[in-house]
Image (cartoon, rainbow over all chains, first blue to last red; front, side, top):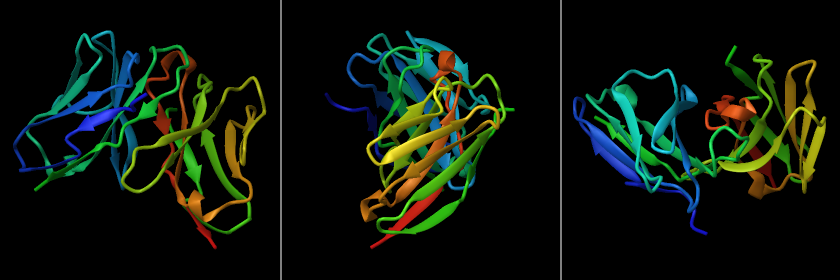
Length: 114
Length: 113
C-alpha cells in the first residue's frame, strides 16, 4: 500500500507570495493532519481534517488555511508568506478521526521563503 | 498544560548500549503516547505507542515505560545500533483527538560503531 504522498517536495517562494501544498493520504484513510516543523519550534500542529471538515486547529495565524476534498486529499495554503514560514510542512493520515488511530506521516514539503 | 518536555536534546551511545529518552507531560487528559523516529530528509515514522492502562510496552529492541502518577514516559532502545541514529520525538494526545499530536522537542541520537 502506498504511503502518504506530498507535493511538491521542495518549494522556494518570495515574501508576500502565497503557496499551496498538497497531501494524498494512504488509501482508505479519511483523516489528514498538517504539522509545521522548524529547528526552533519543533513539530507544531496546524490543523486536522476529516470528512471535508476541519476538526481541530492549532495556534497559527489566519494566513494558514486548509481544506479536504471528498477523496480525502488535502491542501494547505499559506498567504502573504513571511520569512518565518520557512519550514518543513508535514502531512499525516489516519484511518478515522478521534478514535485513537495511528498517524502516518508523509515525507514533507520543504518550503523556503526568501 | 499542552506542553510535552523531552530530554536529553542529544545523546551519544556506543553500539550495543542502551539509549534512554525521557518525556514529561502536563495535561492529565492525555492518554495516548506515541514515539516517532525521523531520519534526515524523511517524515517521522511511528515506532511504538502506549496507553496508560499498561506501564510498559515492548516491541523488539524498543520499550516504552510509562509512569502515570509522575506524568512521565520514556523510550529505551536496547542493543543500540548505528542504524538507530536518528531524531526521536515523543508525543502525547487524548485518544479521542489523535489527529492533534503534541510533540516533544526531539532527541538526536548518535550511535557510535
